[in-house]
Length: 122
Image (cartoon, rainbow, N blue to C red):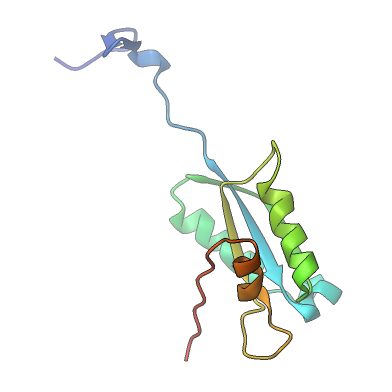
């Protein structure tokens, strides 16, 4: 027989069971251009759309940032979101992963001892 609201299921009342809260997510864009003029960024709207359409309600994406391709600023943007009581569960970065000397995002991951995946499309 199926459980009804108020019935006990494994010691927990079925009307008190709920979905876990969504995971907190953040997007950090690394871009010299967009850090000077945020209106040039096309990535945040695209990633928001992906979270909305494919995230299945599992993520609360309430935080975004755009920083220049600078090691200190990228580190600060990441650690502000990971260290402390109000941390996020997931950070998605985009940009700063090219082959120019100024593109330092993967190296920041090494310094923070956090693995970054680098995907280079062809």
